[in-house]
Image (cartoon, rainbow, N blue to C red; front, side, top):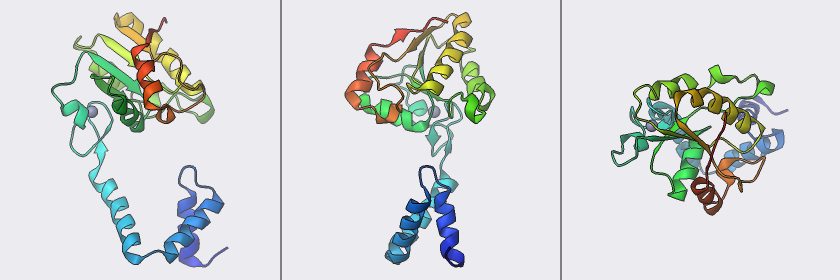
Length: 199
Ligand SMILES: [Zn+2]
């Protein structure tokens, strides 16, 4: 539709999640009209984030060092692990200030529709963290939608034989929604009222 590099920009933007062709075009023209310094800053931060940010070797959360801030914090309770789908869920739960344990970021949820199975998630790494017997409770905080529930059920079956307390966030979270969109009060309450998951 457009010539050369303008179309390249629209194509690249269109590959981002949640950006349709119309939005891609709108953002592209915003960039074309923007101050060169602003665009340089955006380009720089995109490059920098890929160069500097990696994933925590323990929990899979985003980190700027080998371990993320939560895993480096000696005041965190090492007997409880909260399992979430994405790093953005860690941010949402941290905002509630209800949880003092550590996290495990799966990197997604089980979704047969999208061809995502347990082997595509950081499940093996989670089991590895349980081998020394220090962890006594696993809180499953996957999203309250189909994929999140399927993942919670799978994990509960896997973890129960290990003799751990396995809990799931209490209802009250909007069903079908994303954890990150829940407000702090609702999410905090869901934490306090978490219930045991029977396999
Ligand atoms: Zn970590």
